[in-house]
Image: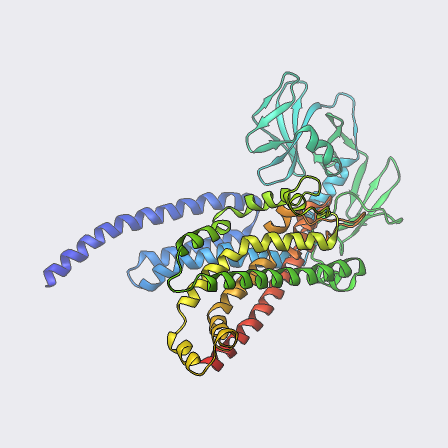
Length: 514
């Protein structure tokens, strides 16, 4: 027996050793690959976290002990990387002014303001300009030197020589790691382009003029003593406002580029105290609750009704009916939402043509709300049908038989016996459905886009908190990631609170009917 155990252990050790060495070598290689950009960016906290994760992995897997940890570590690290860390970063961002005009640190903002005051010097370099985004999403000037044809990428950090493809005029059309803007996007994002300045020295930089650019010397300089920037050409002086992360003149004129600072709970208090934000926010929140609750109520009612209709013993064609009814659930939701969006078109949509209506579904608040609820109910009720059918078939027959003996039939039996027993089993699923619909971005963005919008109002009649946060972060003319992050934290707290209350109610129901 000892000999057999020895042979088994030896073979297992040989195979396991090869796998272990391969996996640990892969981990080490990935760690080195990830560490290089962290070192280049000076992200020492990120490097420390990576080193700690690698140390834990090697400690657990090199030794033969701690068998349970060998199974727990991968899932735990993935949970931290893809759940806990993004939540922590979102919370951290919510306490800052991070957004358009406040993306960089103070030194980079100072250099950009100085570079924006560049005036062309005789004999300075000139460039042909294309504009694009880097792989990290940063706005970048793609420059071709008119003297020697060399190609460069210029951003708020400075110039970097790159390999690129150019057209017959010499302008860059493609470059590895960059997405070149088309003419339409260039016209739409002129304001964003106007804020970009590319420094080439302490008081020099590159300035764009139309589709060309030049390198020159700035008329602006920074004085550390007064913490201010002075423009000798205009006489303007911008003094640093370190609380808000901006340079501002005595007249209140703010420089185009600021820097990221911690502003405490200002984003949160703005939601609660600023009347221009509080009013729309409360309106969105009320509709958000109604949309999530209405979606759950309608889908559950229709799903339960169809499940009870098809749960009759001996009923013919039930397989066909069940297959037919789950088709909406089987179809891709994003495609179905786009189809529904066309069906609600006022002029040629199927809904108005079929029922002889002339409803402006996208132009009236209540019509638009009804539209998204109808479409979302159609998409969601097959799921409720499936889970209700399964729950009905799992109900204890003895309870139902006892109710019949006691004379409880029809509506009374359903209300007193069937529904309470169903709710005990289905309430967790109803809560998860509520949480999903509370953040149902696709249903709103693909169907109505948040419409209708009133003139001068950035909040749509069908906007949910999640679409409002998205528009603040990405969809508006100026992106405010800090404010959008604060809204995201509010969404998390709201859903968590409602879910906790509903789960507590479920436990009370279980105590009553157990």
